[in-house]
Amino acid sequence: MSGDLFASAAEERLARRAPLADRLRPTRLDDIVGQDHLLGPGRPLRQLIESDRLSSVILWGPPGTGKTSVARLIARVTAQEFSELSAVNASVKDVRELVARAEARLGERDVGTILFLDEVHRFNKAQQDALLPSVESGLLVLIGATTENPFFELNPPLLSRSTLFRLELLGPDAVRRLLERGLEAEEVAADEDAMELLVDRAAGDGRHALTSLEVAAALAVGRGEGRITLGDAEAALGTKALRYGRDDHFDVISAFIKSIRGSDVDAGLYWLARMLAAGEDARFIARRLVVLASEDVGMADPMGLLVANAAAHAVEFVGLPEAKLNLAQAVVHLATAPKSNRVTVALGRAEGDARASGTGEVPMHLRDAHYRGAAQLGHGTGYDYPHDHADGWVEQRYRPDEVEGNVYYDPSPHGYEAEVAGRMAGRPSADGGAGRDGGR
Image 1 (cartoon, rainbow, N blue to C red):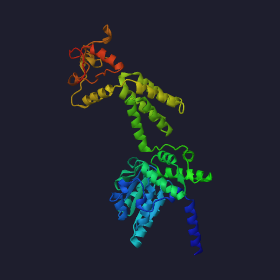
Image 2 (image 1 turned 60 degrees about the horizontal axis):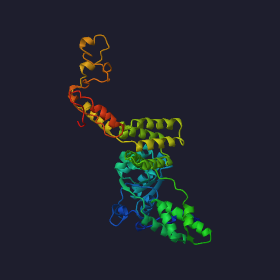
Image 3 (image 1 turned 90 degrees about the horizontal axis):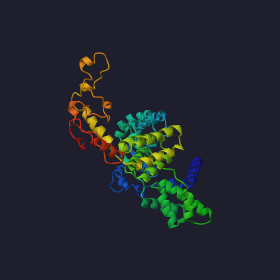
Image 4 (image 1 turned 135 degrees about the vertical axis):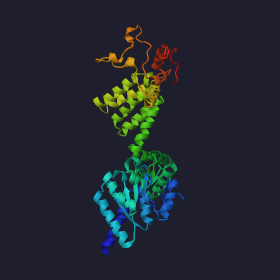
């Protein structure tokens, strides 16, 4: 009896000392804020939880959106045994032991097992494979929580046997409701401008909002007041690390490339700064700039490729943090350069013809004539050497017959490419026309 009393007292003290976010964990589905698309009346996840008919699910969402809270609520309402592992420190042995206990429980008491696996993306392939047979047979109902895109981090067989629910960042109203509960729990009030700042800086992360509120409340109480001021909120917030998971990696680099392609130099610099602050690999950024220089700037500014390649070299030669200046210079050059995708289009057209049916025979006058016997085969006969002509150009057929009339490269009127277009327009085409006017 005394042991139970001591345990109960210790539990109460820990609860009082727990962080505010843990003390305010919801005990009912209606207490969860901001996920009405999943947990509102009649919504799918709510129905599965209330009927205790949950199959394996993956809860995917940014930090502080309620993934763990949902799992805790399931533990409160389910008639099945609820077990929990953290993918950070669990091993394959731990998984196998849990599976053995689940088999014994089902055989002896006809009770199923729900496994909550936090940070499921941290499980490697061997650990996920160890789980798969039990999830597939239904011995374990898996609830996996992850901040990372499960399509990148989870084995396809495990993902295909689970229902994916995406939790969204909390909206401003949801964050405010959460903060109001926190004020009541901390027994303090807050000025409106302090609340607005806490809501704004939370960036949809409920846990971050409550943690900031808890610090601000401690500052106010320590000052002998029961009201949080704007100064308390600012002091509590400090700086917040950028959220940058794998899905953000792809979204941000997409925004980066599209901003430069759209000639918005300030947007390009913003996304560059965002990536560097989040620890993105500078070599990856440099590689993307080198590709963009040919894909989106091309012959409108041939120097763009040289600048991008020089920035990539600087990343290797100088390294960060100094090389961020070289990357920024490349971003400014490429964003402000005239744009043309005609090189990209031209290559695509040529590739289409190269894959098409046809012999693709090299014309006889273009074939290698440098080996003994080549002349007897007719190789090189009729070839006209361009440098023998004053302007270094001669009208001559250079392609197989079946693609001779097709136009691949059609210069744009932008930047240097306009000069290229002028030179090309002044030359008659190989089929006897008076020059190229675009099109195919």
